Length: 446
Image (cartoon, rainbow, N blue to C red; front, side, top):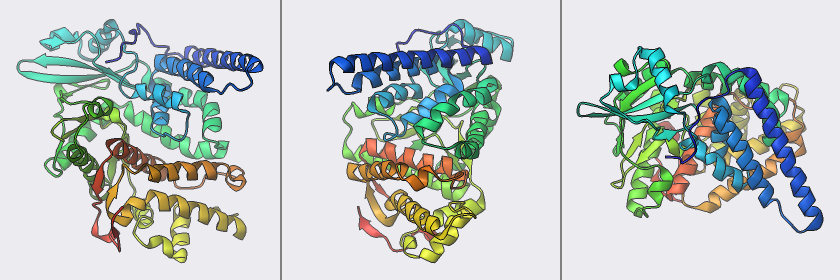
């Protein structure tokens, strides 16, 4: 658990939260001033200290705001190419090691939900959180011979989502090099998913549905049982799952066999959801998984679920089929269906964007071209990041009017790249399982 000082309150009103953003902006501006003053006396100095100072100030601010503001940091930490290392390292803490709320606020939430304190419901209840993330924190409790994980939502999370995203917009336009039109296209999807994550009644229902559907289907995977009698609109109670988060697990130097076993369970978990359930755990960061020394994997959070429309599913996954990208006519047909092209595109623009998206899909689909894929191959990820950097600098991309690509692709792509990054951290070699219609002619090993 984090050694951060507990918070006795969270800024809830729009004015309080906006003021926090303004204060942070001023601190970041001061960091730049200090950087350029130092650089005047030492022209050869790089921006390492500036990045460290800014990462510290921005994370400290977002971690006090919590909710969707901190969720943005969590999402950014999953993209190793988007931000300098200082930001990645700091923002990764938001996955399960954010500053927790103090116990009196936890009691207040219980009183509002159940009319009782935690101690009146459970035999034991930890006064301090054992994990704290962007939307809520977890306490360990017991009753009889049962051990529970009790997730408690931070106050004001649901009410502040829309206003927080408006405050985040200026940062997003700079960080993601996106136009206002592109942000409008995707922000509604992001806001909808964050609203769903703040709905613990919905999360409880989905958690039960998905874990029951997956029960016994995938070797090495285990899930908690959920308890409605100890849950409500801001509290979810489930079985306590033993295990380690990714960083702690890798520090034990697990064998290649164990890393492959966990990686295979991860791949099969997502394969089944994408192709059988058509609804997917769309938050694949290490804080949502518990890894065990015997190679088993626990899934502990189903707050962010992406439901996949049938027409999007068919068009999107057709692009990943081995050999598909050799058929230009079919590519253009699918790209049009997925909103990669605009009606007003000139032939030259369409050719440029067809090439850009073909290259991007080629990277995403590379593991699907093989029966076995080594995700520990860093060259694959360096190629992805280099391509992303090159594409972001293309003037045609920067000057494009409006968003390109279906809004449904936002969380599907995020899920795949989050999965790929976790498999890379595991250095795992995976048997690429997929439905029959996606198999095509594959190579044996990569």
